[in-house]
Length: 182
Image (cartoon, rainbow, N blue to C red):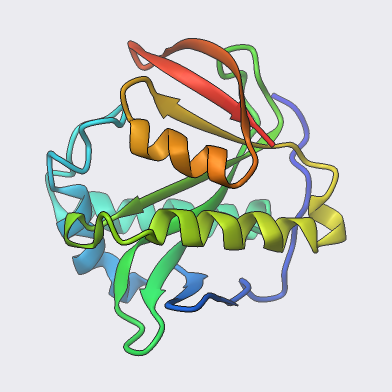
């Protein structure tokens, strides 16, 4: 394991897009996050199965907050700009363990409630996150990458739209993955 970089923000940033507010994931997001992560269709192209309990989600939120504290960033909530209702998550996770031969990079990810699919939210938030990272001096030296289980064409398009290019294929959690780099 390598030394984590420090992307500390005094508070997690709030990024506004035309329709969404990208903000810290909060404990009060747990119920909506459980609705998302307990949906088998949401997990179709993920390496793990659906969440089985709200306690799993509470633990996931605690883990994300530990990333905020240790590295300074982690996944962020994608919330409706007008109501602040959680509709999914987006943002970065620092990967410091070798993954298909890749290590020490910011993994750009996104996941949404199925009721919000097909509206362009993944592209909107991914573009906002990439733009945000480009404007933060402490983040400019860190590679920004993304991984997609082969077959998830919609997610591949999102990574391509933000300027990433396919650079590698490998197996992750027993499934073939495409690796993209900015």
